[in-house]
Image (cartoon, one colour):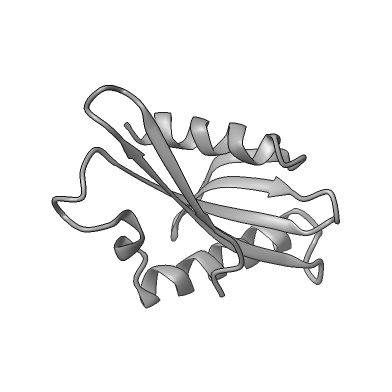
Amino acid sequence: MGAFGEEVVSQYVITRKFEIIARNWRIREGEIDIIALQPNGVFTFIEVKTRSSLAFGHPFEAITTDKAHRMQRLALGWLATHGALGCDYQIDVAAVLISPDGSHSIEYRADLL
């Protein structure tokens, strides 16, 4: 289910002219689902949460303050290891809800921090 959500969000940002740089970039501290470059040159680190129902809350509720700070550290780690420290960046989150009939919806929030 998570891979489906990441693919849907990747296609969503591609239609907005983002260039996908990496998916599932991982270091010891955690993973960044999608790393993209916006047309304006801003690196964008995207956390994707996919759910099949709201029974356990909205997917955005899984983004705690601790999770947001970890995402920021991961983003800085990626920038540092790729010679881009000091470049503009932002952290976005996307919620993908999959309905029982297989249809889905995306809610996207830019610049979380």
